[in-house]
Length: 147
Image (cartoon, rainbow, N blue to C red; front, side, top):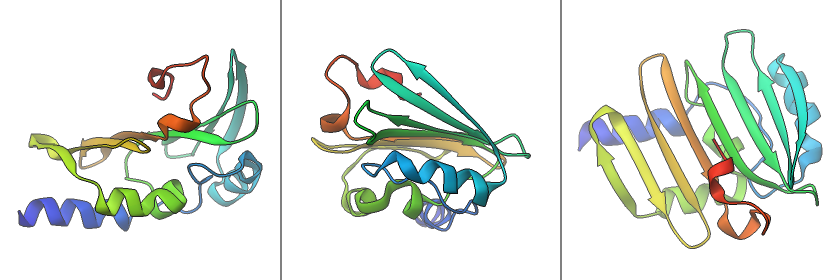
């Protein structure tokens, strides 16, 4: 139990600064790029826009935005767990109060609810995860686009 709590604390206290918040406006992506000092690439996909920020250390954050400009999903992969308070925004409460569906070896966590899905796993210097809001995913897409 202590190791799970330690991991959760690590997730919450992540070392990467600002991100566009889940459920928020896509306009914050440009400020995220400046704060992170990363390289930003925006790719228009069918039914959504993918904003990818690649940091000099190789960490990659992907922000998935609907045509209306709302961030419906976020994924990350890198050496550190990003700052979840910034990533999840108002959905941080869902993360904190969500019922963990799965807690397994290698520190995998999955939270599934009607209005919030979160999964993360990893070990030292290799973390990945994703979070999305099913109600914000455009009707023409499935949640599997958030990878």
